[in-house]
Image: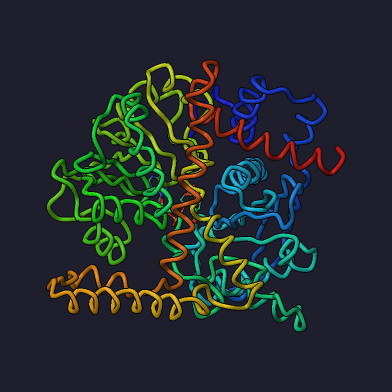
Length: 476
Ligand code: NAD
């Protein structure tokens, strides 16, 4: 995907790290300690499938153990390599620090095209991969907690959790060994949508700051903004759905692996999703223009570009042609270091990956806490909260009747006020708070220090500073 003279993914992350470190006061030794990847485990294992033994290669990389457990998704894709998992593990370290989830950074991957195998075969492969990682404590509630990423979801996480439980029959915290599980298998409400929801909350927070919006040569709110989304999987679909259905934005193009759909009036996200589920791609969707060379659509006119597929899609070869004044990186590493420089010089504002897609790890953190506490969020408080609200409403109604004031509360207000927060409401509230707080910590540096030109550098500065403080407090 990247142009030949560009550095690889891990080098690209390192260059971004170095750009931030140059503006910090860090000893060279500590800088190097934070930068390097602690370890990467490579495993090759065989599974008997369709009458013969198939060999698979997988990785689990641990970038930083300044906090444990370390956290990071497991990706199933043919592109998986040591360079890729190490880059993604480093991003996890910085992401967790930025949004203050108490984890170090890790990432895993299996070189496989999930579409090549049926469900039963995938279960055998996933369980075997999990077995290899569990027996080396590379999946463990206190040491290393994976989550979904490209090509994996709730189903794979449930298999991994079950595999861990089978191998650790007396571990009362077994469910906390992995997050992103389905609700019936120890998951949490709102995890599937979390990364896309986080993208929505990040954009809402950005648009709360008119100064920042004008830096991107935009004005007003999200209503009517033209958005192009690349990658219509978990992250891209949810981001597009929430932004169009709840914020009034127009999804003017969706780019998928088989091409792109374009409609300046705005695509119906749910209808496109149903089509993709049935057809396996966007091609043939009625009522929109189909562009076979999907990546070209990254260069179309729009207000906001959301790369939500994979790394390296904005590179030196196309960055100059990108017209979006605002890019929010829902995917990890979609912009190469070279493209980042070009886009910055053009005045494009980039909301960086380590912040933009942190919704997933944030809600994973809530799930992990839920598993360790063995109780659903809201279970103790919800009815007590409702009872207090009811007392207040009844008292106000009694006063109004006593004084003959004739006040009545709007039905809608009363219903909302009398409904206590369930798990989903609490998860969304915690996620919203996290995205707002993290944005403000980046913004403070971006707008407060002249030498910091962009949000990515400020995000790295906030994150590296926090990791450095943890290492220093350990005596390093
Ligand atoms: P996914 O597998 O659910 O979806 C990826 C989508 O991108 C698929 O629909 C695929 O067909 C499409 N795609 C693949 N190649 C493409 C191409 N060349 N052009 C356009 N579309 C293409 O994966 P996901 O979980 O949505 O992850 C997407 C990105 O978000 C990854 O970079 C991942 O690391 C990042 N991310 C995911 C999560 C999460 O919670 N799932 C959290 C943080 C970051």
